[in-house]
Amino acid sequence: MIIGTRGSQLALAQAETVARLLKAQGVETSLKIIKTSGDRFTDRPLHAVSSGVGAFVRELDEVMLEGEIDIAVHSMKDMPTIRPPTLPTAAVLKRDTPFDLLLTYDGTSLDELPEQSIIGTSSLRRAAQIKRYRPDLVTQDLRGNIDTRLRKLKEGKYDGILLAKAGLERMGWELEGEILSPDFFCPSPNQGTIAVVTRAGTEAEAAVSRLDHTDSRIATEIERILISELGGGCTTPIGSYAEITPDRKEIHVRAEVLSLSGEETVGINEFIPMAGGIEKARELGSSLVHMGGKKLAEEALLQLSRDSCDSDDLYE
Ligand SMILES: NCc1[nH]cc(CCC(=O)O)c1CC(=O)O
Image (cartoon, rainbow, N blue to C red; front, side):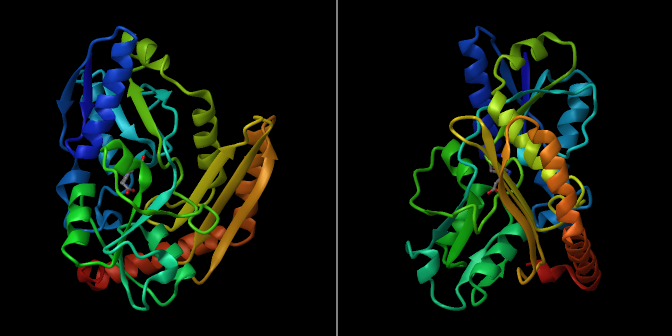
């Protein structure tokens, strides 16, 4: 069976993980690298790439529908919610660390960074969350693969950068950084989770579905439901994080929308019962809208499209 993957180091590491897990089940695979538009337009911020949400995913879908690959491996947080029904997510792998990490030039902690320190991130959510936590810091756009971002930090262009911890872990980088608490830095929905897609009704689907991790599937689904009525994607600062308690009776859910400046926030942070959790998450999702979350998300989107009409350099 052929596993299709993007060519970045992170994507390759993820695809190799899936290859290894399948091999342990007696399934032999080979890797095929596919270039996506999300990889090509690395000169602009992700939210300004025209194909926007799903840029990394769509082209792998196409080559899979054409039969060129049998299995596609994705960072689940990069996947649009609406998927072609013929391309099911056959497995949600056991989640890695879902949190964000701050790496600073000289190991300084977030609380100790001097005023006006420059923090690089390409994520509107992380930028808004940092500005909320430390309004005296400056955020700057930082695109590129994880290796590029680390190089820019080393070159001294930024005092600190923000990344998903899972990305570094998967690439085998043992870097000292500060894990940011989800109470202040609610991660992106499905951050730290790998999804494996196949064509429906294939041998590949049967093989891959054995890798599915139930609690990770439930948590990631809850995270999507919580924010499903807000619209957005990577074009708005939205976080959503669901954590099943060790006794599996409850789910700790957190979700929030921020203004781009981080000055305004609408959020929830509570425990819901595991039984009927999906229904309860839907209610909480609606309550985010009623509390003004959708309005905030729409304002962020408007502000972004206005800025990008003026000048693309705003993001560099
Ligand atoms: N948006 C890019 C992206 N997609 C998935 C990860 C990291 C791995 C993951 O969260 O599963 C990253 C890098 C980052 O956010 O720093």
